[in-house]
Every structure is written in structure tokens, then in C-alpha cells.
Amino acid sequence: MASLKDMRVRIASTKATQKITKAMQMVAASKLRRAQTAAEAARPYADKMSAVISNIAGAAAGSPGAPALLAGTGRDQVHLLLVCTGERGLSGAFNSSIVRLARERALALMNQGKEVKFFCVGRKGYEQLRRQFDKQIVEHLDLRSVRQLGFVNAEDIAKKVLARFEASEFDVCTLFYSRFRSVIAQIPTAQQIIPLVVEEGAAASTTSYEYEPEEDEILTRLLPRNLAVQIFRALLENNASFYGAQMSAMDNATRNAGEMIRKQTLVYNRTRQAQITKELIEIISGAEAV
Image (cartoon, rainbow, N blue to C red; front, top):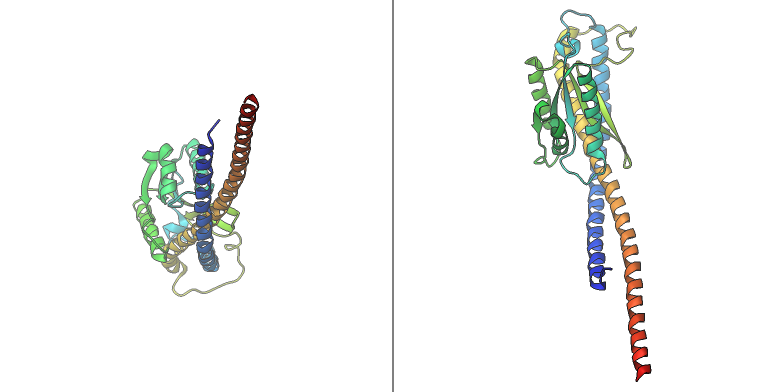
């Protein structure tokens, strides 16, 4: 059995850990408010952008001059998985749930005879994926030096993806991220961004519009912009999801530390009481012997 000194050290260590997890919880809570606001503000614009492009794409469906970002390459052989995760851990299953979804998709595609490539955004996803798919990771972008996410970060990623698409390095690109719902609910999401998936009903719209310039020219300008917008939305959703998951994880860790302190203190008091009782018995026995 551990000595009383060892028990005191263990209790003090657990209390110090509890203070750290409590502080991290409070920091995550303060950052979550701003990150959640940014993510929610980006949703209407991203959704409207998708709706407008889908409407135009529906009108241009089947056009021989349709942009490749809409029509695709005509093949479905090489898939690029754009996996966005966090730069740090201590956030429960936030990073691993995104990686799990991407891994499942990759294995399913490989079982169908497809070629899979990875573009990792975020350190944690890269570290997990390279254990199994090291040779298939074609690019890794680290955002640890970015203090506040901006549209320029999404544009940089979009340009890299577009350059690879124009070089015929892949046929289909799917974006993986975590959609923020609440502090305790973050939803791993897969979204095909190349070629663009036209929303159901857009192609069958009965409303007739006249476009200036022509649909194909509008799409040529809007599709790259939409790619950056969707990636930016994913980064903001991920940021809010990370802080929500971290806040929840640190709250659980703080509660668990409190429970450990309670149990350790109980054992310490019982051991101390038993030791005092033993010493009293020895004193009394010695006095009776005299």
C-alpha cells in the first residue's frame, strides 16, 4: 500500500491537472462563441452560392461547353480526398471521427479498384492517415501559424486543388470536415466538390432565366469561387467543432479529476485513520505493560 506521503503527492497532482483542464475548458468556451458565430454566418452565403450555381448548372446541363468543374473529366478512377482536421488534440473524438469517415471512404473506393489520393489540411489528420496511407498523401497543409482563419486560407487550398485537377491528377474530389451542430454534437461530413453535385430539382426547374453572359461563361467564373467558399465554410465549421469538442472533453476531464480526488481523499483519510488507531493501540499496550 502507498504511503501517506505518496497519497498526498498523488492528490496534489490530480488537483493540478484539474486546474489545467478547467482553464482549458474556459478558454475553449470563450473561443467557441466567436468560432460558432463565424461558422453560422458563413452558412447562408455558402448555401446560396450552391443554390445559384446549381440553378445555372441545371440550365447548362448537357452543354458541350460546360466547365470541367461541373461536367467532370468523364472518368471516375482517381479520387482526391481533401481531409480537414484540427492542428491540436485534447478534443475527444473530433479529429479521429473525421479521419475514420475518410478512411472508410478510401478503403471502399480501393476495394472497387479506384486510385485514392489524400490532401491533408491539419496536423492531426495527417499524423493519423500517414500510418496507413503514407504513400498516397500528395500534399499536407499546416495551419498552426494561422491565428485567425480567413478566406485567403481557403483560396490557397482551392488553388492547390484546382492546379492538380487541371493537371489531370484526379477525377473526383471529396471534402471531409466536421459540421458544427452543438457543443456535444459535431457531425463528420463528406461533400463532393469536384465535379459539382447539382442539387436535385435544379435541372428540372420550370422557371426560365436569361443570362448575360452565357451560362457556361458564368460558371467558368463562379465554380472556382464556389470551391473556395465551400472549403472556407468547412474550415469555419471545423474550427467551431474543435472548440465545442474540446470544451466538452475538458469538462469531462475536470469532472473525472474531481471524482478521482474524492476517491483518493477517501482512501487517504481511511489509511491515516488506520495508522493513528494503530499508533494509539501501541501506546496503550505499552502503557499497560509498564
